Length: 249
Image (cartoon, rainbow, N blue to C red; front, side):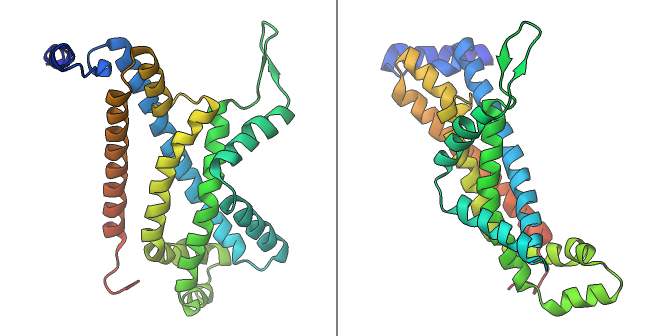
C-alpha cells in the first residue's frame, strides 16, 4: 500500500511536475512527521496549561485580595494587549539571556530552558490571559445565590468554586473558550520564529531544498485544516457532553 502511494506521487511529479516529495521521499516524510509531532506537543501542552492559568486566574480575580486581583488584572492587560510574537521574542531573547546556563560534563554551556520550553511558556501565558477573562465571564453568569448555597452546605470558598461554580461557568463560556483554543492551535506556528521544529519549520526546510513551495504550502494548509477540524470536533463533543438542558440558554 505504501509503495503504491509513493509510486503514484512519483508518477504525478514525472507527468505534471507537482513535486510532493513528502509523500515519496522517506527523509522528507520523517521531517514532516517530526514537525507534526512537535505541533501536537505544543498544542496539547499549551491548551492544558492555558486552561489551568485561566481557571486559577479567574478564581484570584474574583477573590477578596486586592493585591492578587491587581496582579491578575495587570497580567491580563499585558498579555492581551501585546502581540504573541513579541512575547515569544521577549521570553526567548530577553529573559532567556538573564537565566543562568547549565554546564555539561564536556564543559559546554546549555540554556536553562530551551526554545521549545520558552515557546510553551509564552503561548500558554498568552492564551491563559484570554482564558482568565473567558472564565470570569462564565463565573459572573452563575447566580451568586448558587455559590452562597454551596457555602451554606459547608463548602469552603475554594471547594465551592471547584465543585459548583466552575463546572457551571464552564458550560456558559465553552463557545468562547473553543474559539480561543482554536486560535491557540494556529498561533503555535509563531514558534517557528525561534527555530522550534514544528510543522511550518519542517515544511519550510523541505521546500527550501526541493524547490516545491506550492506543493508544500498545500500540504501545510491541509495539515492545519485537519488539525483545526479535529479540535473543533473534540470541543463540540465536549460541549454537548457538558450541556445541561435549559441552563446557559
